[in-house]
Length: 317
Length: 314
Image 1 (cartoon, each protein chain N blue to C red):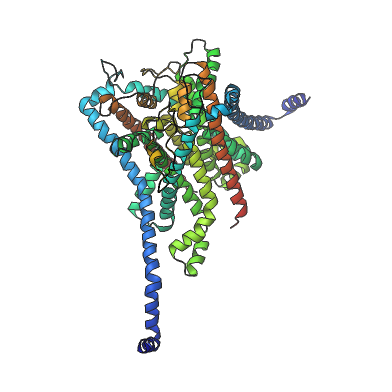
Image 2 (image 1 turned 180 degrees about the vertical axis):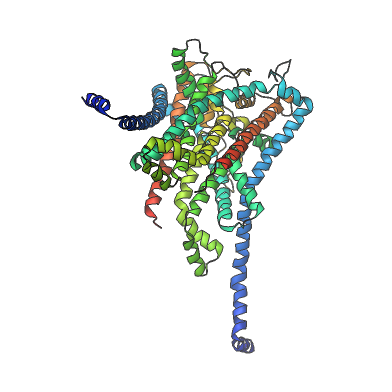
């Protein structure tokens, strides 16, 4: 005992430091590493989700396309997978999606852009601080509530203008989706326009431009890259929107480009099949995955196109 | 009188002055138009709330909140639906919040610039754009049929958790990025490790932004319907899930995780899609409660954001 203590006290100073640091530093260092690994694993779950999505859709679609030819899928004009005389022409569903999306964009892009210009170039700070959160509530309303609104408020209102408008139609669904995505378009566009440096505006004012001319000819073009991103966001939301179309646009797949008619979209079809009781592994069950894959590909296509446009219009100040 | 003055002025003016006047008038018209469009958007919001309240407010009662669904519209209620929503939200939060905050901390504080980090970043941005129903298809194929978790609360919670994960990550990253580097450097200078710096300095400072992001993400999940339909929500459940407790040791029960589920938006969808008018009234009442839930969550988020913004000055 005595000798041990004597030994320690006689130890050179540096050695003592090493002994202490082993106990006080090694454990925390191990803990630090473990935490980092844990956080890294969390970050990789997002990649795993993507792999899961692509994997499941590809796997089930693969089985689907072993029984239905890709050519039929893309060119047949009828979609009746659950009938005895089954047809698998996805175009009937794609047309519904395109029509509702087009109607929605006709509402959301002009409205969203005008609101963005007003808020960024005209409105006072207090108006902006009040209006922005209230507008964002438009996108906070649950989509099923919008479906109710489309079916039981917008459609009856439209029927006063067109008395022969059917109870289910793509017009009212599209209009309502349009209002729903206005805040997405307006808030991202506004951020982009406010990022345009003030001296560009001042230059325009100095040349005698009015605020409107400055907004439309200087600020808007300079912010076009960010505004494109806003539009793409709106497009993806409109394409993927499900409940409004499932409630208000009808469930009958129809190859038509007339918004006054009822027609099912890709998303509405998936809902319709999921509500029924199709056996796991049947072709009917696999159709929803093939439809989902198509939906994902179309969304991806718009996103890639948007990304290319965004790059093209990017301005460096 | 003013108009008359204006016209008189216009007649007397030179061509240049006329052009300027016209441009100014156009400018005012444009501003008015912006205001008008904004008004229309807000009007739609009011019309929606008004219509829902007019149709459904009369149906709100204690009985409505405490009854099971029924074939008879006047007896039907939303007991299973709101309990379902609470339980699914709990599981959603438990999935998305730890994973989302962890991923965000990793990307902001730990990750070195490498192609792997780029892959994660691009992936998160793309995931945020994937239609929600596709998440439902994924969990249907993977969790329900491959992992045999069934069409249960657990599957529903995991589905919505994955759906809002990108939102949580993006919001948390923004909040963390707003903390100035000086705070971290001060902590390092005093000998803090990376994790100590994050836990004791970065996270507390960014808590306002993180909380706001969480609540907004959850409010999105509350109203989400489509992915839960694909996963297999039932719209008619006349019994409650197993209670989360039990008489014997260990007193907690997880049986409810595997019970069939329904949630508020599913119940509302079911009532809307029926032809009878009486069920539409029920749908409106359920919609009002749903709307109140998500608007309340948004209001809380706005308040928290304003609070924290006021308190912290860099």
